[in-house]
Amino acid sequence: MAKQRESDRAAPASGAEESAAGDVAIPAAVAIAPCPFCGDGDPAIDEIDSGIWAVCCNDCRTIGPHTDGKHSAEQAIEAWNRRT
Image 1 (cartoon, rainbow, N blue to C red):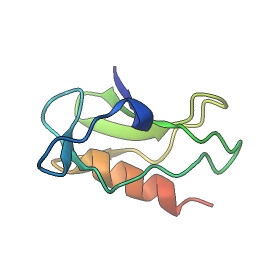
Image 2 (cartoon, rainbow, N blue to C red):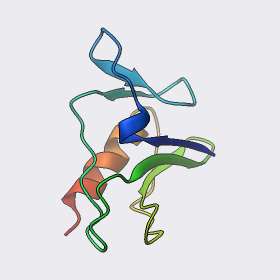
Image 3 (cartoon, rainbow, N blue to C red):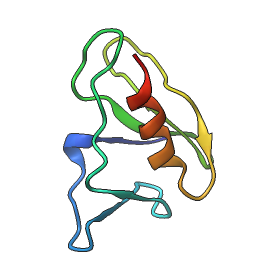
């Protein structure tokens, strides 16, 4: 699995970040919101299977909505951020 905590990612000069898988760009401006269940402020974007992404909380082990496709990491973050 390719886990990537928001705090571990460094933004390249282009303003986009490359995932650990190397094929999905995540805009640096896309911040991952805290976990809506436990409040953990540092959830991780995780490729849970080949090309399938979700935001995962490392404290309570919540796994957010799954997405796949070309922009799936960014979409997974957006879906996580809409959760309440």
